[in-house]
Image 1 (tube, rainbow, N blue to C red):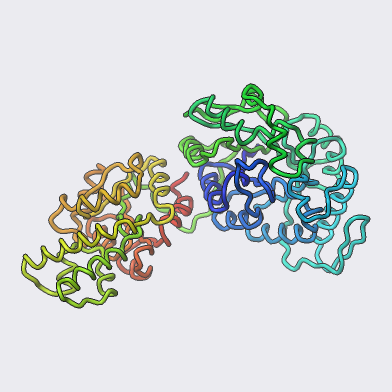
Image 2: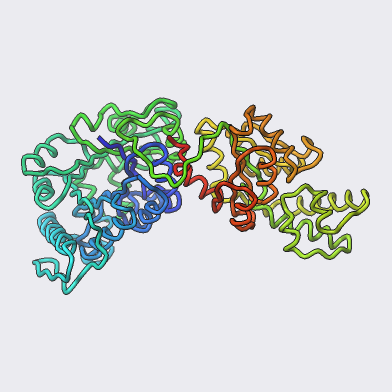
Length: 544
């Protein structure tokens, strides 16, 4: 049995869906599945991005996670030739990890092209022809098809994978079960009904079986029930109703009589901290692959909870690594330029300070010095100055930086990276020599107190990077030896300080320093930024 995670495309935007898929892979799920909707079910859900773009992005961001449409209709809103090409392309982009889930569609999504939505008999006949066309195009070469409802003229898919995608056909009753056995490579169902499996096998179907297990996860059962009632009450209306309603407002009307007790009879709600499980398990109906999806929009917490638990044996798999690194006991993070997009604000603050002091220093030279101890930075840029001048320059920089602070922004996925590392049981220490006033601003921006084990500041050392003392203080706060830690920074000064402290280091490009310079300084690896680091934790071998 494989266990998948349903990406609720009707409740989340495309970027968040990609992030959820990456987290699902880390948590040990075997696959993700996503519906192909033009509209959400109800207005309260508020989203409906294009599935093919999102799944392509997920393919690029993951390495072992299988992908599936759940499901797409290849016969009304799309011509089947388009779906045949899209599926072939996604199979190539994902290195064979894609399953094409197909169904005869719902009026909600298909009526938008103005062709109407046919009755059940014509709908099934058209769907049958669509599957014929997809199979025909997947044979290669130029193909033609002249059906009762669909036609194909001199069409060829030039990019076909060596191994064609599995095509799982959605079923709801005997007629669709027979169609799945005849045309599909597998069966897809939204309800764990044993008779669907029996009918499929009796009709000669031998492929994989996909089903769904609804799950509500929240701090309390009552909260989970209320959330499911608000966004998913429509699911209790049944397929005959769901396939025929044209717009979200109609689904809202159809679900108006659903009450909390109805939800309690349909969904499962584990207590917080418990392994999610339902009281109606799909594997009781012998459905091998199945999926879990949240009925309350808190997927990050849900997936973080699962990641802390060992993945089930069926979900464990070997991950291809380009170069694994030992899992550290602590990760020491620089902040400016590494987690927060602040380096160029520092450049601006110093540039204004120098102008006030009637000293001309080019901005590019200031940038190359950012990350050093302030005294070292000043000496390298303007030479030796008396103590009063240096103190005045530092004060001006601090005043200017404080004025610029509202422009500070977290780098993408910085907070999530800290939380992910913490979730792996690795201590997170912020190794910065920023003055306490600056550090307070940065900590407020990060808003990740639960993930941060400790932090350093300017009061902890006499001289900052590239002197190694701040790294040594961070090691002491973490209670680890140098060979048990990794330092992450954006400047040569960060990498040099870590090296002098005996700590291996990773670089990030978000401070504006070229990767080859970071590698020359001693970085073992260089990531584009926190988001890239987060996405490649699996590649490092830290998630096993």
